[in-house]
Length: 212
Image (cartoon, rainbow, N blue to C red; front, side, top):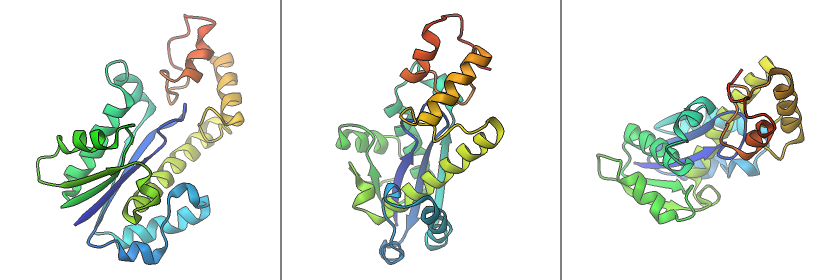
């Protein structure tokens, strides 16, 4: 059995990090479906493909790491360590013979070794940069991760207003966040306080450390 693991939302200042894994006997059905790196697909096409991927795979799994969890863990752990844990958690659940990972560490081999060290059952791990562009099984995981993150961000926007994609380079996101801090003297609970964008907003007043 072959697994692919990838994430969506590593860099945003708002919303969760989502890690997804898929388990399949062969990647031929995924190749036939035409899966690609989620960034190469339109939101509509990702939404269309997600249920088809779940139908083709033996199993799929998601790990949603919300901003609140990142905020609680990051004073003692870095993002790579948190992702290693999430990747390993999904692989323990799926128990594949072989797993292909889209490495989050600058050292892809080290990332794979660290994930493998957290597995109880034997598993051949291939850890690569841009694996989602080369391996359909990882591309499928990237699509599921992106669709889930987009769904959660859409729910947040429905509750709190048009907050954009959640990424710092998105003007809609930075505008919404600045306005929120100005009105509440705090960051929203779904903001990542360790991110530079959030830190800059609070730098003017060091008393603004509580979340609204």
